[in-house]
Image (tube, rainbow, N blue to C red):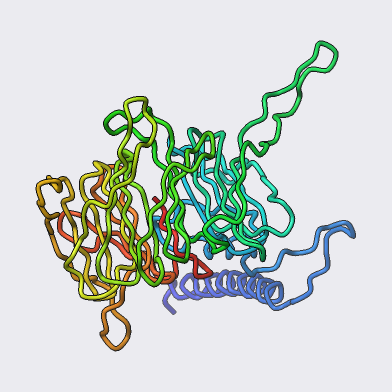
Length: 394
């Protein structure tokens, strides 16, 4: 017998024993893990142990996702109890006034546009009034509001009341705005559809704010923002107005009405800075259908119009109209917005950025940004608002 055979047999036996112990331990460990995973209701370590949190995502994150309609959607101003009917930035761009169908005007402080909450001043209109338009007067502390009731349209100018202080009781809260002037049954009891204000700086104007209110009828009235005095009145002589606005320097008024032509008036100022007269000086002719909206460029020398004919036009109105020189069409752009059948849609609101390079335009709840120089679409936001609000963000 070979003396090496017992040694080999002993080695094989020891190896088998070691392998058995190893796999036995491994098998018991795996069984313990499987039971732990399979047990759907493990006993808590303590009776005071907190319950397990659900695996579904919290509703707050879902809401945060739904809040943002577009990457350019910076923020949402909350607090309105009904549809927003008018909106206006203050001259310095740091305040935003909104008119709401709930009968309240809110002036938001936009010191930080990305803030989670905004402070706002609440102005309650007289009972029964429904605000339709707002415009800032001289500064952010005074605002003109158009309100409509069954008896007609009214205008109110709200301004800050001087704080009353005494030695015994110092002023702790800012005073609410009070009515500085008001007019009732203006525009022959018709509703005011648009209202814009501008600081009159052209020629001999004294820098006062001139507010232009446009009715759903055919008339446009100019108001002195501080005193409330009516300083001018024009009639478009059309079936109805679509809108009217005033140039940034307070020189021109432009109105879009029932026809394809846009009428322009010049406000002539006296040597003392007051309004002397308002003259019909030119018309913009070229569109084939009604003009739905228009806006002045920041230099007050050009106008952009949008029409139901599916086009936009950029006009130069810095002409010698007293020598019968007509305004010139600088550019014509086709509106780059179509419905599902390919039909060109029209814009119902326009607004130009302060640098005059970007045009914001809307159709219903669709918002587009366009290059003023080329007319090309820079970006589009579908369903920019949950409701059918039509106000651009500029």
